Length: 226
Image (tube, rainbow, N blue to C red; front, side):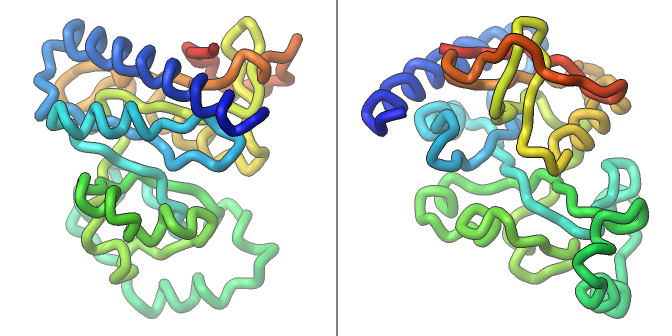
């Protein structure tokens, strides 16, 4: 897709996301200043969310981005909720695991959401956005300026889509990061304010396929496409 065409379609999709956010805030009764929106930093072939992100910041929303973490906690287990602090020794052990062991049930590459201020976002100084494939450990000092946010605190999450079908089934990159995260949101059911988090996938119309193979754990999304 030519860059100017992608930029035009991304801008139009951002307008639709802005409308979706207004609708979400209206239905839930949450003030923009109390809303936490999870987004993503787009790869070149993805829908660019820049306009939507700036609009959400301007409204006072808190914005979270995905960060790859090798020793992920679910939202009920995270140190910010329980006071548990993982030792540096255990983190060093994780760092020394062979690559093929990082996908085990005990330690697998996955992600969590971290809050990013407008100032840091605009300065392009967020380490996990500048190097999105790097895997961190929870108490990595590079993550200190970017507080963890649990799935149950999200008001809305915007999910990148590689391919999708008419049933809202999403094709991702194959690592299962969003599959695991969306399952966590599903298990949480409602956030701390008793509101169901709105999950929206965004894609270009050209990414629609006839059928996306699914597994039992897959969760269909509301897809915004153009």
